[in-house]
Image 1 (spheres, rainbow, N blue to C red):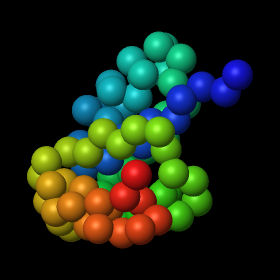
Image 2: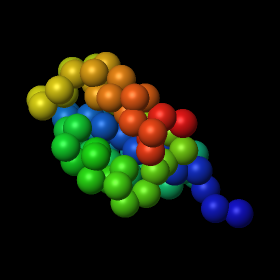
Image 3: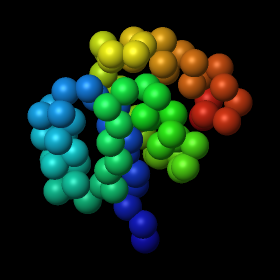
Image 4: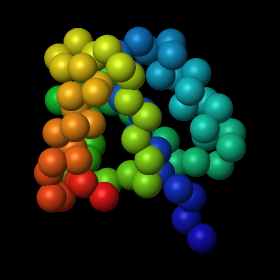
Length: 77
């Protein structure tokens, strides 16, 4: 059985790494992105089971990013 995949979108490296560490210890397959652009690249490769998105990112707010994902047919679910 494969583990659930989580994509962390967080611009602060220390927070991203700390969150990823905890999730990996809990058995999750974790991928990381430092901004919305990098997250889009990750999403094009493979869609995770869960996204953890920071509220304030350098290239766009996390709220607007998730709104865009909900409007896109490929990522809405």
